[in-house]
Amino acid sequence: MELQQLRMFKAIADLGSIAKAAEKLHCVPSNITTRIKHLEDELGEPLLIRQGRGVILSPSGNLFLEYTNKILMLTKESKRAIARDSTPAGKLSIGAIESSATSRLPKLLSKYHQLHPRVDIEFSTSTWENLEEAVAKHELDSAIIAVKPVNPNIECIEIYHEELVLIASPSFEPITSPTSLIGRTIYMWPTGCPYRKALENWLEKNSVSVPITSIASYGTILGCVSAGAGVSLVPRGLYEQFKQIDGIKGYVFDQLHPVANYFIWNKNTGYHSAKEAFLELICTELTTLNVNTSAHNMTP
Image 1 (cartoon, rainbow, N blue to C red):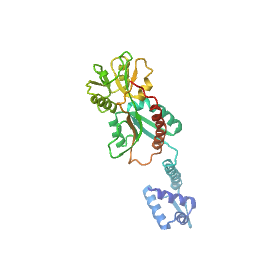
Image 2: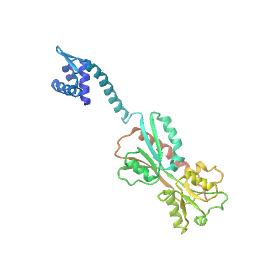
Image 3: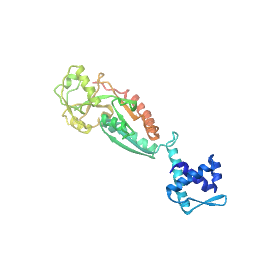
Image 4: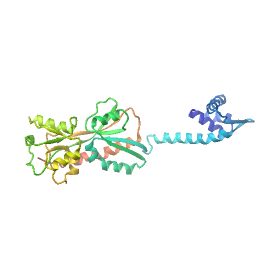
């Protein structure tokens, strides 16, 4: 069963004549006759009854016309839905690293839902490696990660730079340099985390060797720090969200450079109106974020 067969059948039903249908569709009558015969053979029922020079629909033809109209209508709707000037709709699956999911995205997702209520968002968090793989496999439409992707099938755009803040309990002596961390417990995400890598590079550059305890949860890390158990390096967005918690003090250092965050998608997916609308919102909201955060750096 082909759409062109359905269009031919509808034209015959509307005009009551194969010849008139052929004229409307700009083809020869014999072509329509052959295509409709193939359709009848596939369905196992006659759709037309020839009457004089015209045709009428058989009982099966009348029933089939109802479904034909629905199918052709849905076909038009589907084309409108994916058109580049269409209103975003349908499913949008987004992934993000936990730092973005916790600090930057909640307000963004809320605003997106207000702007595009016809989009059904599915949101998940994971490590940047898993998110990149999921986008490459078309399991996610897009994701936010803090490492530039290497997969050749993935496109990306740098959306903001996340400043880094060293956090500790106010009961600790002030942290003035990397050597201030000697003898203290450091809590960071496991190896592979770009924020952990930034801390490791900073310590190595200053010839400081300190063991790092791996914890794959910012909630647990913040809890340990606020309890005075150790220190950590976190994105500023996370610090800004939780700095009012009693027991967390922040420090910044020029050598701890901001980490770029990227919005990624699979370049083989084609146009996706819901994803494009989300990217547009990200570029608007997080570009403002870059300007605002650069204006209030802390000093150690």
